[in-house]
Length: 558
Ligand SMILES: [Ca+2]
Ligand SMILES: [Ca+2]
Figure 1 (cartoon, rainbow, N blue to C red):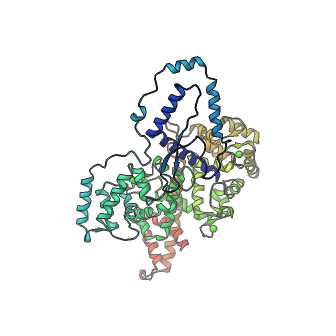
Figure 2: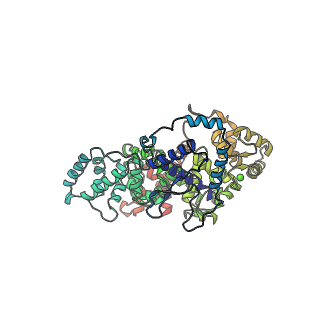
Figure 3: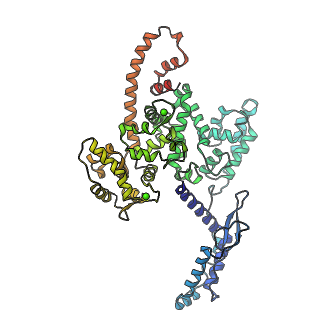
């Protein structure tokens, strides 16, 4: 997926440029070149720029002096047609046409900011601004004292909650810490190892995001992937009071984990590449949410990522469509989603793989994780990822704009549906006028993602072209009158509203079927000792509403 590379590349270039500017040597060179231009030389000399380049080995950046042209592989002949060189000569020509009077004025000015390079503080800190470790001695003492009390002076995973307290780290960093101390190789961690890990993490990385990132990425990667979160999530299942009931249903662990991790990536992996960067983590609310798990015992209150109710609704919606329960849904299955609300042309488009890297989708198989992306986007078309998701779908030729022919292609399906259900149709031209009026695109005849983000009515736009049911709902109400706060944002996100309503419905359905099951159950079993493991679990589940809700699906899995 070519376009996904663009934002990453830009970030990298920005990062390198900032780094380069912050170097004292750069400042000195630039100033020297600047005074050459402003000062004594008649001819304007192109700036010879020391460029920052990555060494092929350790990835460390080094300064080398070279002409301002794109990096050339070693051994390649240098090309005189390099675009940058042309820019350089343009600069010279431009310079030679400079107004001579203005030049004289500039010459009279004193040199710019003498000594500024020395005074300028470095300001680029990819791992946070370095600072001395506060209370290092006290923390080391506290850690040592804690270990002294332990059997054999070694800690197991059970001791890590307390160790996190001692070293001032958030509670749910315990598993990443345990792993970073070598917990995958040994179940016991020595005091020396723990202190060494703690010191390494705290002296090398200076803010919370970079510490967490490097703990989770095991100190060796430039990004986090789905797998990196698995252990963290399993530890949350094992120890969070709000997920106690889930311990008895191990079959659901991986599904809860997949759901939460997919939601994390959906929301914060803004580059869509499945590789979460430190910058993306830093910009997100993930670490704050992870911290709230520490105080909030009701997991359902943590609506970002972790809510069990949210997982439950997503999973049940998938389960309803996946009639043969092989954890894969087909095009036909997906076309039944929400009583066939999404148009067939859009379903076709989704299965062309336009919003996923997963090859299986092109083979007509939608996996659970792809469905999570689908339902999150379908329900909340105003979220940043939701908007991008549908934009990519509607931009059939992938040129970065939605053109009239693309709108017409999707609208034809809607027209057909209107005729089928016998409702009054609206011509494409009329619909187009309405939509252009709503979105007010910068350039007529094409809609960009920026236009949609700006107009704040992306859901109305998208639903008009591929979700007739929701479009009719929008028609019933004034799109500008939705309950919004001062910033024009909805009070509760469409997603939260949807999950709340659906959860109530599913619980009611489940309650009804449970009563029927209990009647059957009383007929079949008189003696409790005859219960199988699954049945006793089902019985136990009636004590816990959350588990009982997931139970029918679990039965079908096993
Ligand atoms: Ca299936
Ligand atoms: Ca297009």
